[in-house]
Amino acid sequence: MEAEAQFIHYQLKEAMPSLMKEGQQNDGRALYALGQIFLTQGIYTGDTRTLLRSMAAFSKGKEDSEEKVLCRSACCTMEVGGLSRTGKTEDDVAMADALSRMAEGGDVLAMTEWAACLLYGTGTEKDAEESLSWLRCAASQDYWLARLRLLQTERLKEDRESRRDVFNQANHLALMGVPDGEFYLGECYEAGWGTEPAWNKAVHHYERAYSLGNPAAAMRLANGYLRDTGNEESEAKAMEWLRLADEKGNGEASYRLGKVYASRGEKEKTWAAVSRACLRNYPAGVFAAGFLQMAGCGTKQDEKQGMIKIRLAAQMGYIPAQMYLKNPENMAERLIHDWNV
Image 1 (tube, one colour):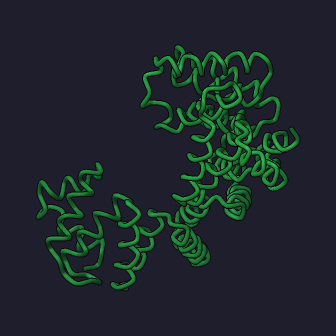
Image 2 (tube, helix red, strand yellow):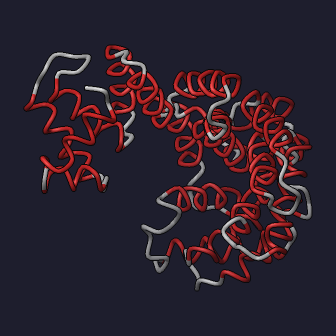
Image 3 (cartoon, rainbow, N blue to C red):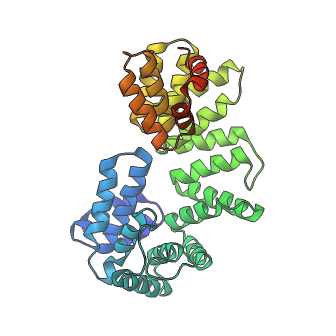
């Protein structure tokens, strides 16, 4: 299938028309490819509708047949990375057996899903090393998703060889046009993973990642420029990237903007930014919104609603909120100073 080969090599624009047509005909492999495309787009944009399209594509291809076993596996992996499953059901065992046969037969998509089964123990025994071996095999055939999963696995390790492999995989993905490749390449240059640290090169790749649709890159750029304290040009660039990240729905960016506006005494802007962080379920933003609402800073004072938010932040595991609930007097002075109340 030409469209499948294009999907494997991240030629998504070229692949989409044929994949959509084949998906409408209930072709399991096309539905799997569409599901992965929608899933990636949904993660980048945070668009719930796109994520639902991904699940719909996978679910449509879940009927028991070897053609559609890929979609069944993808659904398993989406369930909290496969962790919510026992991996012992009859259906999962049959799925894993089919994927194993397909992988042994050279099916690059099956190799990647079989690797996921081995990693999470879905329908088979867990075997992290064997999982990594199958990911490497699929990545060697230039399947972008296998390369990305291999990178994300190696990224958790701290040895020099793994960091070098992260750099190499990121570089290859970037050349393929995968936004995450550019993002992780920026990370490698920023942290000196597998290469010499170079902030100017990190900036280049983060900017490329953002332009290709990865909003997390804006926050990395903002944080990088914020570290250059006392430099007016860097501070201006940091604010620019914070605003862009905020526009893309990043809760941390909203919160950080609120801190900047608070330092300037712009109370209404502070509240507007922090309330966005709260709506985006960023724990620090939820806590700050609660405190500002209790204090009536930039918004109408409402102690009841403010306390509800603070308790919510504590339930989310945000330690300052938990500390505030135990002893509000001890934290009040610091919060008043931090938020310029």
